[in-house]
Image 1 (cartoon, protein in one colour):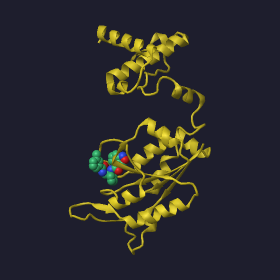
Image 2 (spheres, rainbow, N blue to C red; image 1 turned 180 degrees about the horizontal axis):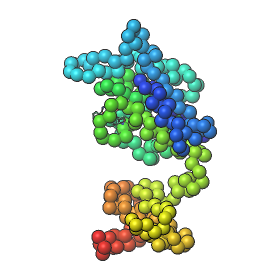
Image 3 (cartoon, rainbow, N blue to C red; image 1 turned 120 degrees about the horizontal axis):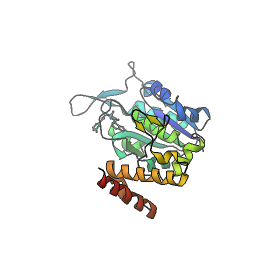
Image 4 (cartoon, rainbow, N blue to C red; image 1 turned 120 degrees about the vertical axis):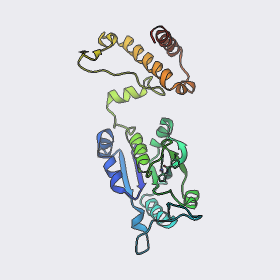
Length: 250
Ligand code: 4G1
């Protein structure tokens, strides 16, 4: 099912640019993903078309004002009949995960609100926003890149946006684990040879090798990911093999 995403941003062209390329660009072309961007400056009412003002309590920095955003939200919500979940991209939000992406990808419609300056007047967030999501713990100059991350992650999941090989890979063990290493031509290179098993044509052995590498790399680099994944017997055995190989040849 297709998804429509309305993004409220002071830089609408940025969002339009972000969905022009690759898998997501194709999802848009095929009508599986529709992205609209709305500029709250168009709904500002004063002569200067102000969207931000000084922060109460003093100090540096500006805050996005309630009224232009509320007018934009009203306009966006009126643009289609179906109800939309409104998400504020914010460093105060819960961390975006692939589980969350999968959940949101099933909604028919989303509204994403991007902050600039010091962010948005808290009263608008309390009354008009359903959920706050963060893409990570670092400082950005605006929520647009975070919105673009979410749009990309949702867009690539829209049916038909991936080719067969890509969707097959999605359902395989790779779920919840880091990826295995990948190789392409040439087989022999000054920088090394491709692991022999990948050249063997033994598809079962290749699948096991890839799963073992994915498990091993997850254990080495992101062990916390293994804590919330329940490994089946085969995966447990392959991880133990990897750990033994690693201890013998560190
Ligand atoms: C305090 C990072 C402020 C940033 C603490 C991830 C960051 C939106 C995100 C900031 C933003 C930390 C995000 C900060 C984001 C208002 C305008 C908020 C931009 C803004 C760790 C600036 N995921 N940041 N404040 O970056 O929007 O979604």
